[in-house]
Amino acid sequence: MLSFVSSCMKEDYQVYTATDGAAAMELLQREQIDLIISDVMMPGIDGFELCRQVKNNISKKLHYEFQSRVRYDALGISATGMTGDL
Image (cartoon, rainbow, N blue to C red; front, top):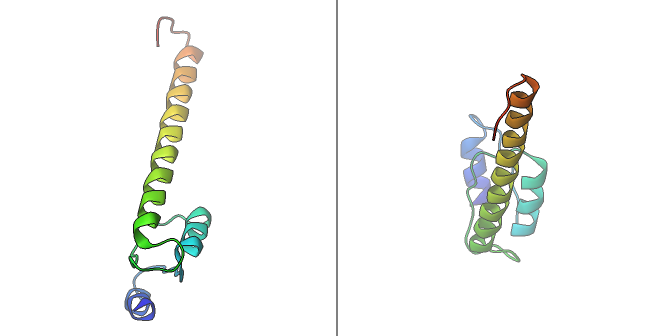
């Protein structure tokens, strides 16, 4: 199934493949992935656990990016000489 799905999509998309959940998590750390097609019954980390880990990592990343953006905006405001509570 992995070969079939990846061969169907390779013409139009950059396709990365992983044969188990642990390899998928490593791949997600290295590459910017926009879409995940996963099998529920992968060896090791199954598809459900992979989804939980991805969701948890995305939540942490979004929280970090939001906090960074807030700090950056606060620095930008204070750099213009504006005062007051942020």
